[in-house]
Amino acid sequence: MKYIIAIIKPFKLEDVRESLSELGINGMTISEVKGYGRQKGHAELYRGAEYEVNFLPKVKIELAVCDGQLEPVLQAISQVTDTGKVGDGKIFVLELLQAIRIRTGESGEEAL
Image: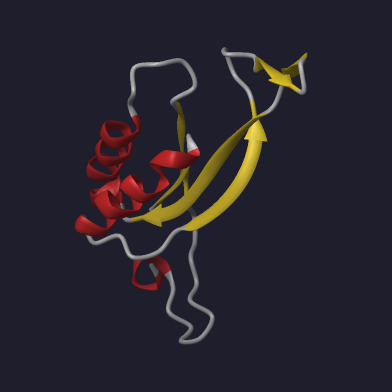
């Protein structure tokens, strides 16, 4: 099993959800986060004054998948979030040792 963390632009969230739903991925956790990478923020104007925005709004998606679902999920996320511009995001993949569905006690891939 794998645990995927994807940091994406907020306006791409619905596209990702639809794409993953087509693959049969029914559950994910979404968090609104702020951060920066290579783009290092940007300047904005507010009431005539320019100021630096160092932390940009992003969305963090977390989901657990079976090993066989990994590549299609990574491709789906990558394809719908790629705008070709700096700040499109990142995807991290971690090994998932155990998953347990609390209600039924199912564990491993059955819990996903």
